[in-house]
Image (cartoon, rainbow, N blue to C red):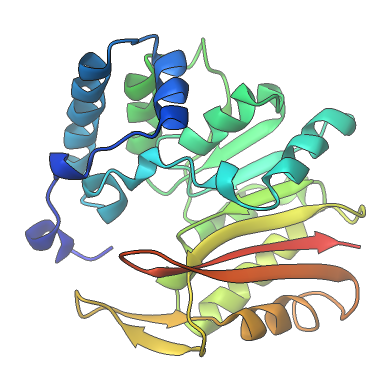
Length: 261
């Protein structure tokens, strides 16, 4: 996210839209049942956040989309929460904590979740968004960048049963993405079924891309992403990697999961 986004992205209320599922979730979580009142509340918090941090996902209101729960392996995350004793779920790049709260609403135990984001003020605004407090919503939070999160959680190395990281990998160079993948692998539990999953911008051909802001990013393809995890980060044959390209009106995303066999 560069400073250029301040000039280009503005909180655009015309992009505010909730599906019936999204309305039901945000209504139940905030206690606001009136559609217009809920809209005004969400826009007010988003505007406050965007005034501090001009992330496109805030300016476009795409944080409302419950993206994690739409990923193919989301049911497996919920199974981990139900079936394992004291599972640990790490959400990296949590922003307001929407995905974390959705997982809790769907049954994952809150006391077994760790949320992390570079900008702790977004996590705090998550309390404003959902009208909660650290006491009423005591999920552990680690204020770190993705690359430093692993260092901060070193004592939990090898204990994470599930790690979610979305809309972040493409912000790094190819080498940094490899480094981040290695660090996440160190956190993952060796138990079969342990999973790293998420989504980020991708392409049918891997390489450096230039977006509309003039920013350069390295986009993986499904094949290059599979090769990175199955054979480079992990020993070949020890993980199952699933990924698929998903076009949207703005970008093409790579939805993916890496599961220990």
